[in-house]
Image 1 (cartoon, rainbow, N blue to C red):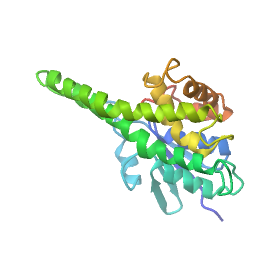
Image 2 (image 1 turned 135 degrees about the horizontal axis):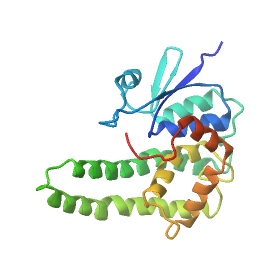
Image 3 (image 1 turned 60 degrees about the horizontal axis):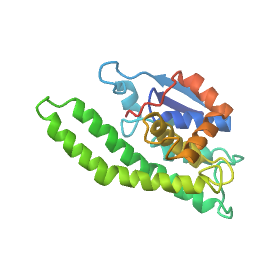
Length: 228
């Protein structure tokens, strides 16, 4: 008998995309929802204790506890033999799928995380340090973060001009993995209708999926605020 998969879902976290993909697959799973600490916005201790890294997301299955969104999603896909969210080696979409699957976590997420960390750090500094740190953060963003993010988004615009999904002609797991990055980017005006119309059209297509409505209802939140 196959052990039941349990997604331990933390509010305002990357675990939403795992929840969303599970709903798209209509795979059997249990869901346990955790609230962040109202003061610190950190995950509760019982959540941290489950994860090998103490971070969201985390999935358990029998005696296994697994962290990292992409690892969890690969695990789920391996357990879903009839799924069509991962183009096979012979598919013409395979290399495109692999590129965006790895770009989501390897290139795009670190840049967005840097933006979040610097913003949070600046707010917590003593007032006399803020002007100097603000200048440093602006330089970091202008010279490093934004140019790299712009190149990723330019490639996204180009690829979405040839096929409607990040995985190619068909919806794929790459779309669910990068959804958090893209939707939060749109919420924070990193991605706009003016500069990235195809990306915004993709966001609208993703949100129109019935699985998004089901996942949103279970999540109970209307926003994917970029918190960790």
